[in-house]
Image 1 (tube, helix red, strand yellow):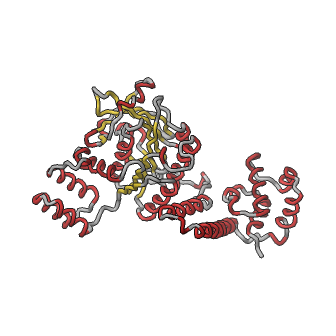
Image 2: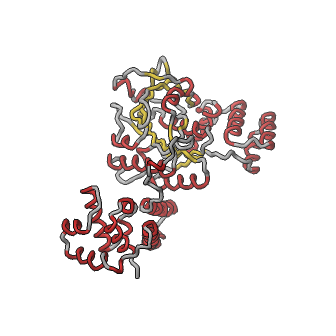
Amino acid sequence: MLDLQKLTLGRLLATRDNDFYSKLMPEYFSGMSLVLFDKIKNFYKANLRLPSIEELLIVHKDVALQDYIDTQILSDTNKYETIANAFLVGQLQDHYVREDTIRFLDKFMDDFENYEKVEIIDKLQEHVLQLNKASPSVDELFDVGELEFFPKGDDFTLYPSGLSTEYDSVNGGFALQELVLLGGRRGSGKSIISLNCAFNRFKQGATVAFFTIEMRYKEVYDRLLSIISEVPFLDIYRNELKEDQKLRILQAKVNTFYQPEPELLKLVDETTRTKDFDRFELEMKNRKFPMKDNRFFLIDDESLNLSRIDHYCNLFSSKYPNFNMAVVDYINIIKIPDQKDWKSQIVLSDSLKSVARKYNITVLSPFQIDSSGEARFAKGILDFADRAFSFMPVDQEKDPNKLKMLTSKIRNGKTINFEVFMNWPCVKIDPSQSKVINEQLLPGERYGSEESSKDL
């Protein structure tokens, strides 16, 4: 019977094909085949090339391994030249997925009665995430000579950040597959700035996901209503709306999220005259008017972990071709073992970058900074960011609506510090009122104090 693990290892040692090796993972092997693959892997790490059979045996001098190679791997019955490398990799992946899923389901069903619904969903999503990591499907090898001579418009799209027109005019904004991190003190407005960035991307026709961990979805939703209608947030949040404010919210939300369907516009006109807002709510629920193709989703999950982020991004990317941004509010409180350990924080940053690459989206996430301006818990979270910013108020008395945005890191572009104009009552950024600033700031001035933060 054909043993694909042995055939794969025999082919690898005979050809020493780096491209073939790059598509193989330890999860695809078992028993002595796994031992042999680990030896090959260790040799590669030490020498940056694949070993010959002679080199492998000289290095390890393992009698059992030598016998396995001689009688199993180099056997004449282990040579099938007509079988393509891609077929071998695909079959090994399929076998791994089947076997690992069987093992998972056996354990899952043994403990099934002890799980609550959230744990059931988590276990299933974690298993899918594990399979995805061990089943790479994206091409990673490119021959430069065969690539297009000139870049096309859709090869690398940059989207305005929504923070500063001047910044965007120089650096182009934010790109797909980028991880953007936004640093601020506790209570300084990180969530509000992130929400403005998300809404700005939505206005450009994209579907956006906003993951909220600390704040309830209602708090985020009220802020979003304030941004689109320019009705003061606190009036919405405290349920102290006047009739004219309700009409502004009604019209802004319809114009922003719904298609201009005649019956809907007629209902808006009637409500404008009658001020019967209860009837309007009822009609909207019953008649299900068509919304625009791009959507703005809020995911309210105080137990948010990496597998759920991956699950929702997979869901949205499958259903909405225009899904291209996810905001995770915020990176430091995503659930992970040893959550406040610096190593775990770096894993979170690395994983969010992987999500951005995997789903071809921009991932933006705020992070906390301390009084010195450094990232709390782990400086290393910035290692995986393509762009990172920290911000502070300009002057609470003279310019209460201005923030200084400092570029901490930029992978492709020019380091620029700039002002952001914030309409705090309506929690709305106006990027057209920003301007570039170049002065050097002292550490204390740069990051402000706890007292200077905004409680919104």
